[in-house]
Image 1: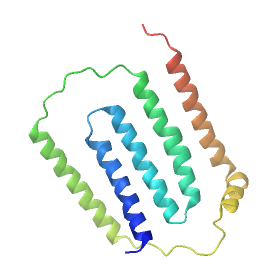
Image 2 (image 1 turned 90 degrees about the vertical axis):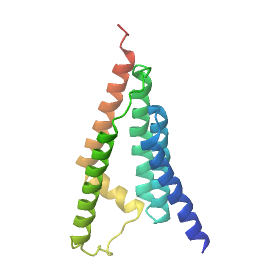
Image 3 (image 1 turned 60 degrees about the horizontal axis):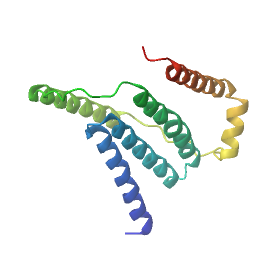
Length: 164
């Protein structure tokens, strides 16, 4: 195996470990931290695929904004001092069955869809993407910045309310 293969397997292992921990841990705060680990692994995979722009967007938007907003929401909410309720094994089996059926359906749709060949012509550098984003697609860029501004204002309003 080449060093690139070993790096890929290591990053993929970190991503899968973060995803597994995000859904199996009992503490919500640790789930959010595991989600950040998984998203960081995805950003590393984008770098491995020579998609630096997507890696930067992954870090800035998903890790820097969404995951941090999730952590703020967890920290600003009431402490989770509830008793652990016993899970019904029948509900667990039903949910696993429905999940398996949905996964099988998605696999079937993905395999039966004729995917067009990607376009290889054009400039996909960071400079060209940035120029396109700030000239042709400026409305989408401004809409995304407006959504982030509203999220920040909402977080500030939630944190400034007095506990009643």
